[in-house]
Image 1 (cartoon, rainbow, N blue to C red):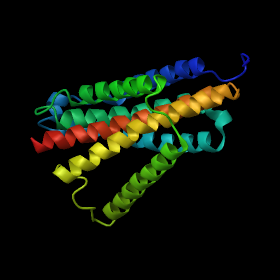
Image 2: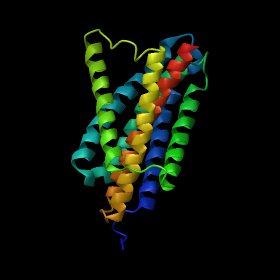
Image 3: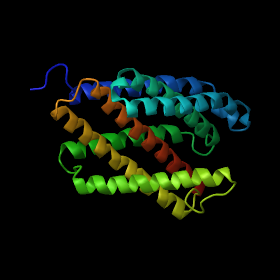
Length: 239
């Protein structure tokens, strides 16, 4: 029987909730700096959130590497990472809200609702045994995530040289289809997180792994939110 010094699913769920609350609290800082009504006609105040975005990205990368190479450090690094991610997500959300305020004022709220709706739907399906992280499933997911990572890396490199991968980043049917596929992949990644947490708890992993499991789940949730937001932006531009 697992003792009080070992990882539990319930403990991981509590710590995930803490991390999500930290993301929301930190995100409120850059969000409050941008007035979407003013920015809709004048982009001057959008730049107020930019330093928070850059700071959040840099801190997230550093803390993510710390957690990856030393999971034991997740006890303190995961909350710090959540705060850094909150600054990044809040800044991105404020920018999108300002850009689409006149045509889709609720775009950020819709993305948040769809993200948590997807989380609860996938959690329900997993708990009911409708979807499981089999070895074949894991292999397929790792291949899909690798393909997405290569595409995004190629996009970043090409933009650095003033170029772009055609079609997939626009509001064309191909671009929208690409975003739908990435959203599905991100949603299915939640199953990998659920499986990791469940397996680690059953094997009696150390208590600090609750923070590590919560961190992994948060990474997927933020990715899913960003991808859903990008999809909604493409659909809005399409109208």
